[in-house]
Amino acid sequence: MIPNLALLAKTHPLVPSRVSVFVATSTRRTFALSSSSSPVQKSRTVCYGRVNQTSSCKPNFQFSRFGPDTHRFLSSGVQGAMGATQGKPESGDAAATASAVAAQPSANAVEAVVAKVGDLKDGEMKEVEVGSGKALLVYSGGEYSAIGHKCSHYGAPLIKGSLCNNRVRCPWHGACFNVKTGDIEDFPGLDSVPRFGVRIDGEDVVVIAEPSALANFRRTADMAEPKSDDARVFVIVGGGGAAMSAAESLRQEGFTGRILMFSKEDSLPYDRPKLSKALSSTAEALALRNADFFKQHGIEFAGGKEVVSVDAAASTVTFADGASQSYDKVLFATGGAPRACTCPGADLDGIHLLRTVPDGNTIAASVEGKHLVVVGSSFIGMEVAACLCSKAASVTVVGRSPIPFAAVLGEKIGLGIRKMHEDKGVKFQLGTTVTEFKGEGGHVTSAVLGNGQTLPADIVVCGLGVTPTTSYLKGVDGITFSAHGSVQVDSRMHAAGDIYVAGDIAHFPLPIANGHVTIGHWQLAARLGRAAAQGMLDKTAAGAPLDTVPFFWTQMFGKSLRYAGYGHGHDDIVVEGDPDELKFAAAYLKGDSVIAVAAMGMDPLVSRAADHLLAGTMPSAADVRANPASLLAA
Image (tube, rainbow, N blue to C red):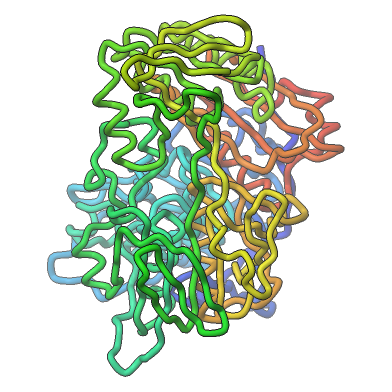
């Protein structure tokens, strides 16, 4: 039996209980709650999830799956701050206000009574029926609001997510949406979710929605249109998540000049993380946006353009084909280049790297009935092995580490994931490397290992990580590189002069890491792209911290592992549950701090942990060590 976790609950001061005015000072992010008895309050961090229903509302944060449709996780501290009503607003009370309708409803709008004013307490949310669709009803900060019920990334049910400080975080991949506006505030994904009107009618909470919004769980944010009299040219070099996020954010922030995007690949930006899990996917199927979107919003795309040099003094970039482009400001988001095997025979046909859609398609088309060797036992290699083991005659993973993922996730979890692969027929040669590839007729036939074994190898995939693609910036005044070749930037992604850098090649300040880091996560790529756009437009002050927590996921054999935080340099790991059964939670400790959390089969545990990491309300390492079972709840 595993007792409840009572470690992560913190009592926070809240805004006054009688909230009389809701002021939206920005259509995107900034809100203030004003009270009749005190001046406007600064933002306070309050996280919600589920309370132990038998705890008499004692503070009790649970690392567990949600049960009922109504969820909460701060208790007596919240209820006390809401006054004698214990969070149950009276009819007509200012605490029962509803958020304003975003726009005047049309004649086709539908209305539905979805709750009574006292049904939800502060920090609760509920999925409700509205017409032929659904909405997520939220009572937060003394006010009802309603937004789309699915995450705009891949449609995860937001009711199973984490509610914190007026935004709900997706349980699958960590995207965050403002519960008052539906705007996306952290990634992955690019779209916001619909926002619906809410009206208090006597004792009834009424949601007003347009049928078109109910039918589509994605909403594209408003964007400025380019203007011919705006002569500014902003260049984006790169075609990944950071580049796409930056381009859209520029328009969303009001930029009306030209946006030119140059990519080494011919394809429009696509969902790269999905490629290693679905190698036969087409660029069109994975595309983040289609060509019509680019045209509609004035984003000019050119593929097949590899940058080779930058002249900062002349404000120009030059490409491998000899063409050059001038800019007023430029963002580089060129990502990484996959590391190749360097042993003898590594140039034989049949040995592949995985970076692009054509790479994935070639591998997928070649593997049927063949002996596959995967070199590298980290995320890309293990995902490829999982993706192809049902098609190949055999799959063998060769890894330098004795246990997959041990350095990042820990030995217990690494052994559990290895067992999952072995149960599906994947074989392992660990603690060794490939010393030579042999072939016939110019095509690989076998891989010779350092441990003396020789493996049949009709096809080889090298998954050895990436190196930052930044050589074109060498010698540019003001550019500073990290030890690993990424580019030093500030929190606005500013590198030097009119040059900005984002995504996998940025060495950026991360508050929870207490320093500069380089992290190749899809979620962070999009977040840094937005930060770069805001920096290019001088919308953020120098030194303003990035309000984000790294959120990573992987999926193998239909099982998802999620990870939030920055666990580099952890000195201890506390694991609860059974990694062999693929149901566990792990806390990564450094000194007396919990710096990261990973889990499988425990949604929305990692999303809630991300909220606490961002808020600085995680329990101490000593608390977790003293009561490790509290990572889970019955």
